[in-house]
Length: 618
Image (cartoon, rainbow, N blue to C red; front, side):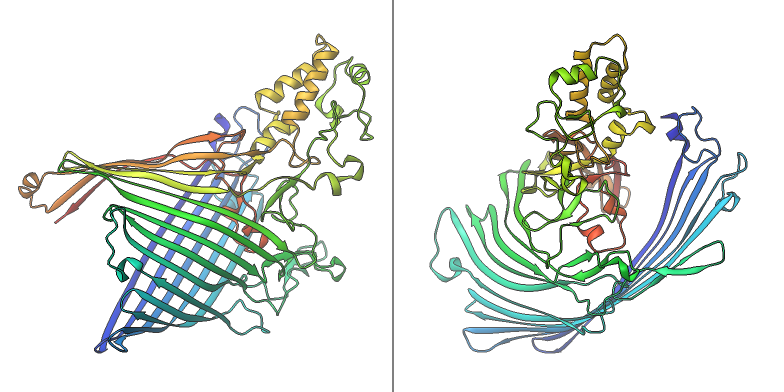
């Protein structure tokens, strides 16, 4: 702990956002509206381990110090222009026509580097390091599109909508020009048509829609690229990205049916929505034959992902009086999604070649499904003592443990052990997305000037997360296997005073609870991870008006609040926080980012934060 406190990590961000809007009433019912906006973020980050930071001589990582630095400048320029025309076609029919264009330019520039191996204490710049490296990148993406929409209404209770969007993007390949995304919808309001006088259902709206949307590839995925490589005889180039000039966006078609229901004079609002969607030409990082020299995966349009689900939202007033009002809300969403086609490709691993990321795309399973090693459940003693994948008898196991053994002296027997890693590492363990996710909370006004707001978020139902950070702690010998359980079973195995029975029991506990990491990646590190998180709570007080008038203030509100106040875990998850994920730092796009989910690794828990604010109006 003392050594960790020696490290420093800082980040400074400057942010500016602004927009200009103008509209022109050309004629009755016809309005032209234009908005231009710009958003600029400039950030610098530094991570620094000083010379001799391992003050307790425990850590061995860059003990002579290392400093990383980075400067990222991001600029987003947007333009949105539309023309709308409202008119009455007849006494019964109305028309609302909208047409416009949108575009954005996104530019990201990064400069960074690091230096390690300082010659002595007191040096705190990267250029003082014995080994130095730099990094620089520049990315610009241009997207432009046009759209139109026509809505025809009949007597203000039935509405038909049709429209389309046309997109062009600089990331599209040369063999693909533009994308077209049509949509259509129907909405009827029975409570406005009939002489509606229902005491329970005070209003009712039914709707259905079909639409298409797309996701563009990364800015440089279409290009064949080479990367620089140093060598003893001089600099050179090596194959980088294979390139694909036929790249196009992945396309999602979705159909929805829903209802908006008002209950008890609209004191309660209920929104129910069913959807079914199918994604084709899915963007997937695909491995092509390496004999061509390009060993990296290439983003390609293959596969199909199907999903369906139900979303329900409710909010309403529970109690309302002069001194107390209570409003509550709750929502939940059920999701069932599956990979239905990979275009003939075998199961595709996400997260690049790193073996400890265990998310896969596999036909018939949820996107990002966890695959890994599982102990052979048909065996009572799944210990690979003879290294031939055969289960020992109890007598053989007791004979083996008749003398002290280390954890590295034996291994376990997973399903498919005899078939090798190609088989035993591909056992299905669980899916990384929950069946149900949602939130609930309340807004309470009391004593005239006080307001209390709180909300909780949850995920549950066949929901798994990988505690990769914990797997390192429980199974990696170089960091001391520093969890109590691993230390305990390891000490029993090495203790000359323990019996063979005790050593065998310790070995079985090791196999069933703690064995992890390569070559048994996935074993004892993927757990059910249902949770409820107390996401936010705040208490506000509006200062009395007579007090403010003496100071020339129109209004003032003081608020104290907390975010990520408490995490309640259900199931057997052992990690720190199931919402940590390494893809939060992923910038490459494609399969490595899109489907690398529910893996706790290389991060810190979601921070608990408490704030106090005072807002004053003049």
